[in-house]
Length: 245
Length: 84
Image (cartoon, rainbow over all chains, first blue to last red; front, side, top):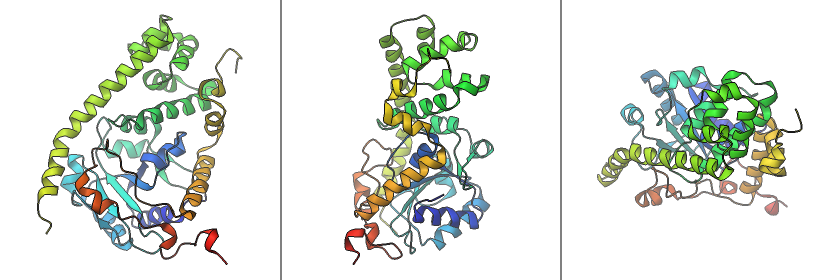
């Protein structure tokens, strides 16, 4: 697989040090069917002491500095913060690597690891359902991405799907016309679903009503994400206010 | 696939339909080709400012925004325009 050399160097270094990590963010979205022009590398990592020691060793080899806040500490990752690195080693100089361990609405890392998607080159990526959960944020740019991720998966696998796939699509699809198709194709599965957008599609309501229900879902998730981050942002502001040691 | 079902082109247009039809490997490779062009043009490695990100802070800008064009870095190939 031809990858950006600097990204490959980072991934190879992490693998050589035995770091348990999963690609997420824009790189994962690309592999799962959406598209985001991403300039950094976002990783979910297991925040136990041996793995963080391995990550620290890998980052030393990459001559990575922690930039801004928070510091690279287990407690920060456990709290849900992202730690930001910038690499300085030849071949990766300037590359940003952001690591997180805990995300809102997303299972703990061991479950993510069990469900991981492995690309043809062996790179481990967050599974699609976990990526979808992680992308339900307060940011505008994540919501069109969610729609694309679900569309790509549905079109790729609708002719050979199982009940788990159908349940996932009915739960997460964000395209009104596809929800209409799904309730027609999978009426027994759709009958069990209480999601308002699916109910409206099942009742053959106009597409703008279905779209409105999808928008309500989005608004609700964005509010939840904003509330989730409020105390974390206060912690970050407090850390920024402290004089640098 | 029965014809009454929607096509990816119907739902998302031809460009997205073509993107959806690729394998994960093909999508990654296509993305990396675009990235290589971007880097060759001197594009920054710094993430775009995202004021909606919970990580974003004006106070961090100085630290986050020291962009290093890829072609100015050790171990990378200069952009085609500068090769003689």
